[in-house]
Amino acid sequence: MERPEYETARAQLVEIGRAFDARGWVPATSGNFSVRLVDGRIAVTVSSRHKGRLGIADIMTVDAEGKPLSEGTPSAETALHTQLYRIFPAIGAVLHTHSPGAVALSRAFPDEDGWTIEGHELLKALPGTTTHTTRVTLPIVANDQDMDALAAAIEPSLRVTPSPPAYLIRGHGLYGWGRDVAEAERVVEAIEWLFAAELTERQFRAGARA
Image (cartoon, rainbow, N blue to C red; front, top):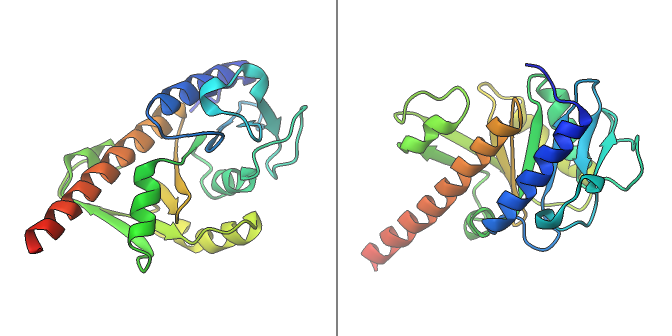
């Protein structure tokens, strides 16, 4: 798949920031986004910017190791983006949200190291999934302020077959990715909807048992 030029990627990430902010998925300065460019660089959101108010100057470039190549300070979680690009050469965009659903689901069930989704029609929005009669497990990893430690903790769960389309950091949010920004957005949108559906279903079940 053809990778975008820097200016195209900047415009895409500004638009994603506004769309995700409107849905309440990136409150305050949370969340971060990146795109792999045609020349191998990575365009990434700078640190501490409100994603609903991004301008093109708030998207900078780093190399494959996360070293800045343009003015600015990259997101503190850039290492998690570069890890995904190294493990999955086909992906071209990574989007991280910090939604109430992602945080609530991962915190409400602290003993679970993964969230298995099955039977939902919206599973077909995930890459490689063609039927609702399947199950997809998203890994859940404990949060850590040390990005190297966090990357090391999640890596074994990324190298399984079939690989997951996203993962959760407990109490922190969702990382989703795709071949391009459009596919990554579709993955995140589908999973965010599934968070809401799962939490509502579990509430109903708990109420029925009460």
